[in-house]
Image 1 (cartoon, rainbow, N blue to C red):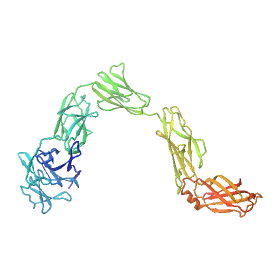
Image 2: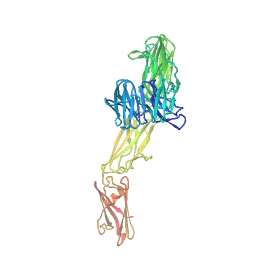
Image 3: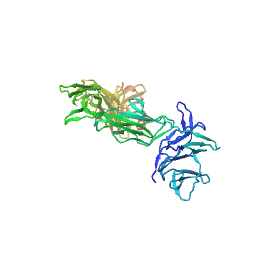
Image 4: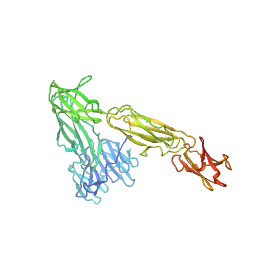
Length: 586
């Protein structure tokens, strides 16, 4: 059995307009006039706002389950599971609750069928063995039943006290005309703007729920004729309190005359009126010939480069006055009274809109304004790229820009496998990896820019994007033997100190060796001194970004220290060995 699931539309509380107070919904019932109504308020002061305006044959509510019957559908709703619509026998339905069995039975008088409700699945199981007493009370809420007399309804409390429920029609929604940002109430009739035969005019409408309970729009239609809805919602549509739903109407007459048709929104009826009279033809000259224009339909005039002039010819037969509005648009009569020169010029990139007015008819105009073509950018390197270096460069354009533009310069760094990012890779002096690059009108080259390359093996990518054009170059920082950028040696009476500054792009320093020499040229005892620096550098690299280091080594000196002349340092990593040569003691 196919079913349709809906959200729970029927709240147990109503919020009073202008206050934070809530009023409980005491029940739901069919009013005998085709509507489903909610019961709110207190005995003697009941109110019965319409929930569903038409198509309801019978309904009931026990506090947990709301049901309502249309011609051939039974709708079952629970707050915990939502609503389900099931095919059901035609006509009304009645319900009875078997307390001892905790069962709910539905009886369909038109066919004599009875069905038991499976409350877990909200499905019906039909049976010939179930019976419902003809005088079963009509439950409309917890502890409430209904008595119907002379077309009216009374709500009966559990103690037998009965009170009349007024059924005066209360508007729960309002039809409004959307006049720009204003909402204008619609009366019994509405006149759309005139339209020439073969053309159209439009109007926008809004259905707003002014009530305090959700309303369901089950009908939105217009009697056959030249009026049509579009940009619309499709019934059934639930509109929550204070919310709205929009639709539009188009009037498209095929011949001159006055027209009237009925717009239906649920049981609301509005007469739509429109008139049509023969009018001058309006044509636009195109490369393939003259194009007949229809009022109300957008006319795309094409694309034009900013500051350039777009020209089109308009022909109006028989001749009548015409004007144009919109920034950048101009209409000039030609020597032929039926011809006009339409011109457009703008310095603003994007879509420009205007309106051609011919008598009472309006023809929306649209022009696409394109920016000047962006010159292709390229990089001009003023320095040779290398690790741990500040490299100067510029951005050069294929030609001077015709208007001021700004490019986006970005730098990314991809370290070699197993290595971390290097925060020193950045643009200076802003210390960031992206920055705008401005080009003034008439300029073809940027100012001087600076890239800091860092000291970690990997690939630096530099990219400039200007409009739709871009250029990108890569700088490779290769794994290499340790580079020592500075080395100093000093000796005192009992101590020799060596200070080394450098970087290790591979971040794999393993060994360092020292050989001291006497002024005689002979190595000092004990000869070559080797040290395993892997643990120390591994710990150091965990605390820094990049690989720049400063190493200080101390050696005790015995004997006459003035005999020491120099020291030679050798440092190794996974990529090779670096030797300083002899460093003289200061």
